[in-house]
Image 1 (cartoon, helix red, strand yellow):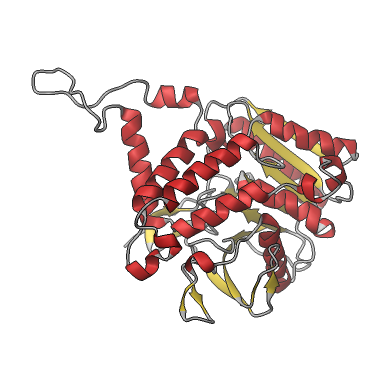
Image 2: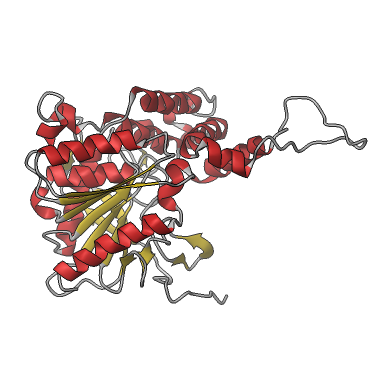
Length: 387
């Protein structure tokens, strides 16, 4: 099979699976005695290892940040428009690492993996993980590659939380922290959305208290509803109106609309399609773990009695922060809170608030202003580091 590859693509990529045997102590007090991380890399690590960039992923993404899966040419990296030769994060200059978090279902150790002590899938017994746990696991990966300091750690949404946590947990190891469409902590409304999504999964009769692997089934109805709810929060009202409006689908032979509770509106059809597709590839236990990690992230509570400024006091990184005007899931006010706390500590921060109509998903899309900001920032990093 011939696969057409653009000159601006990193090309065909396969993941590497890197195993660690040193126990990882988690925030919960539990530990993983051994684990594996799925990783993809793009570009070339230079001799002094000064050009490495770590990309942290959002809820349903993975290590497959850029390029093409040779086994499925339609499987293109989730941030392929951002990472590659000549793209904003230019792999002609930077060595980019994409990593799949612990607890995920795309190759790293997670609930569907075999628990070495039982010989059976972990299922619901997989330990609860936090953003801080992910960062500590990623730091071991940096050690594996011999990278003492990242030129940048970058992420959008949940990935942005990880980038911020890197700057807090490992201040000497992050030169630039790039936080996009993210927040220093979830609002009560965001936690509520996550709880409704989790409840949809755990209420599905096929969930079996997280042991659905043993029943050879999937709580697909619950996963579908969770994805539908999440997807609504990722799009702006204007974007949904433009895409779908109030268009209806079903007409009888005489041209009249049918009435009932099946799919009537285009937006319903879209949401059901997204939900059903998601339920075919995502793990229900992983969804519970990752949304709970989102809920728990709150560096202000962990450092300095709820004062975000205190939490960010000892940072060494310089920051690029980006928000989008129509993102009501993580609105600009949340990013401004982070920016103000950084400025309070006299940290160097660049803030861009992009006027884009696409809601939270804007961080994944092609917006020339947004990409221009990121391109300019990474060009500055490359110039500073003589890359």
